[in-house]
Image (cartoon, rainbow, N blue to C red; front, side, top):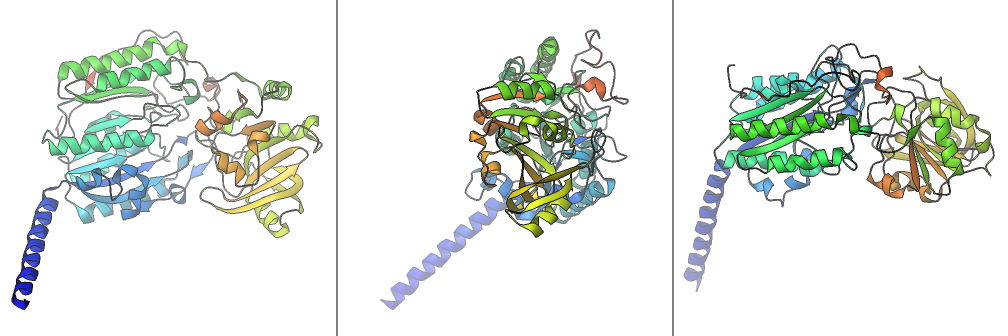
Length: 523
């Protein structure tokens, strides 16, 4: 029996060796694709600066956790040899320091050099990053990437629809797409589409699209006026897949652009990519003209008024929680997040002086010194300390908050430490670092019960899904800050003019398709 057993073992070894050879051959035949990207919305109208740590940069295999469609058991993970380099995403904020930008870009380029050459690159960006002393950072970034990986490599770019697409970015990318929903419920779906487009063009051997149509549309609107939940945004964006799904077209996209940066590239854009010139051209021009035709129909996604009127509505309403968007300092649009103007108004109101008054949650105000003192005092103690306006004090100064500490929680990735202080009938959330409050758990983890609260004031523009579903009623307050919704008050100096709605009587612009040369073209 032993010789037979030995033969059996030998057969298994030979089979395993054979399979390993097949696997190695298969692996060698798979395209090699790098992953890189930086993302932030940067308001140039905010005095805040964004530093490198805000990007929470991930390097190497830890990047896979960001993409459900690239998990170890996913089909796409096995369609390529993936080389994740560096991906950093920051909360929206102020202009990025040149030091932070150069550091992150240099690290990315170094990692790309180490593992090349590549067949493709998935470029995951937002598109609205501003950097001190540099116009068009994303265009600069991709151009420098090309300097390392070459112009033949296929790059597929995924973006937020509030990003900006310059000609430089359009030329240096081959495939490009952006979200089709605001709020961005399709973010992961859009990133997956960018990856799928890249894989398919590598697998079918077609490579770079023959045509890239780029149309700048002279419209600059805030996201709070361009939600795809309502018209005309809903119908406008419904046209995008109709164009994208045509034979001969790879993808189509409409960028609203980013309204709170004063740079020449800040405006709406339409792009269509594909191999059928006529369809690419027609699709792009149809979407661009459709956008222009409905420009005057865009309205705020919810009623807007002053903070004073917002509070009158909230106090008289029987629908709870009544949500008020403190829009001017929205950190998810690029506000500093520490403007104290709204909280100052709330604390001065007689209705909230007593703990028997209408319940109100205010989310939130940064105050690192307040946090430090609260930790020393502990839950249940009385605190009197300063918070807010360390970055943006243009509209109100730091506030002295005096009340009872109801909760202290450490460990949040953005806030780091959160404290709830009760002042009269107001529960103020104070953070070590700014944080947006978007989820029910953001409140309940602090022992708060937002669903049973009369009024919630949150630094946001349009409500994200969980807040939207939670609302009893809602109004958006036109408050001051780095992302003021009244664009006429911002004082643009560098955007291209004329621009709607700043130049509301401007004539019909030229919305003909510009064919952008391929990334490896010498044009």
